[in-house]
Image (cartoon, rainbow, N blue to C red; front, side):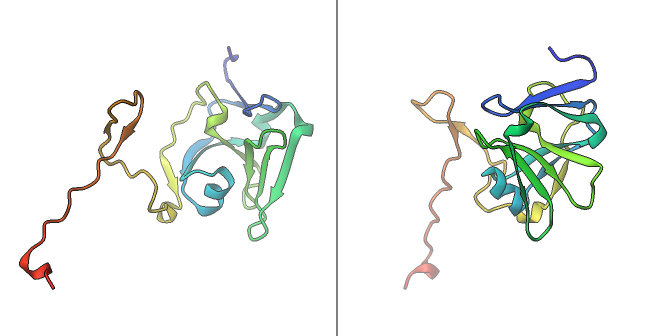
Length: 156
């Protein structure tokens, strides 16, 4: 159990552990290409914490860092398992942004903001209706749209 006012997170292998004071400053979904590539996902949900309320409690030596050449933003990840740990933006040095997925407990903020929504890839889930896939428990899918009916104007 976390102590009141603290949310703890960790990487996939457990080598790196972090904590932030809650509530987090804010939370958002990032649809930008840089985050998509860094996480291998259509979008990433982050929580922002003031640097003064963020601590690496275990595994600082296991953290590798990458500075994005164009922006100077720094992304940190576990060198052992590859889990993204932090995203530090040049224009906000007092903040540390962490993937929401690191935390199993609440962080005191809901992600209500969307950044770079215009960069959402066309293959990302867009909220279409999903139905269970017969014979595969726990799997849902979106049925293909019906075939377009030909009209006389479509014929050669």
